[in-house]
Amino acid sequence: MKKILISASIVAMAALTACSTSNPDMIQRGDAQRLSQVQEATVLSVRTVTVDGSQSGVGAVTGGVVGAIAGSTAGGRREGQIVGVLGAVAGALVGNAIERSGTREESLEILLQMRNGERRSIVQGKGGESLQAGDAVIITTTGGKTRVTRAPANQGPARY
Image (cartoon, rainbow, N blue to C red; front, top):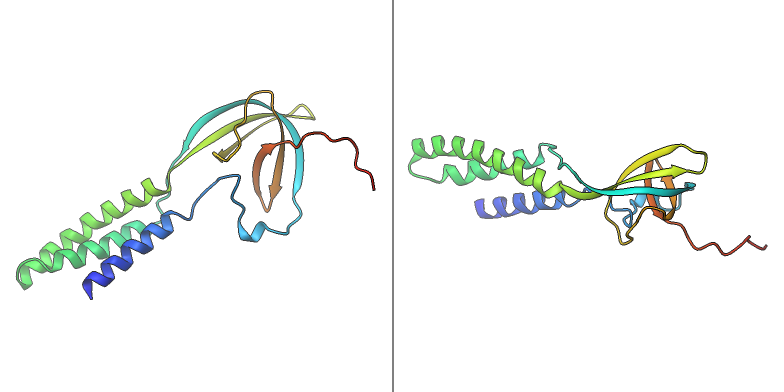
């Protein structure tokens, strides 16, 4: 039973740390079939940045539970209680570090020149496209989230 609980806790923590992304190629389900605002811009510069990982507490709680269970099986009753408490503390620290590390993301900071003369900066995960200074891009905003992608090739005015 303890092995099952430990395994389930580790799987839950791994699944939760994999949920966070700012990849422009990944769209959230709630953003599908929603009208988005689109603006045109030109890339001024692109640099690599690291988005720090989250510390929601899930990793600490999961690690604490796993550590407490693992520690409580050591020695007799009294020793098991002491080692269980120490295991909970150590597990919480390790679980928190795993969560933070697992949600850290290599990203891009993109400095943009808007058509109206304003400059804007957007940080997003690395997607399938590589952007460079001078590239024409579109900025798509949906539900408060913004992503930058290469502008489609100009094919002239639409005919209806």
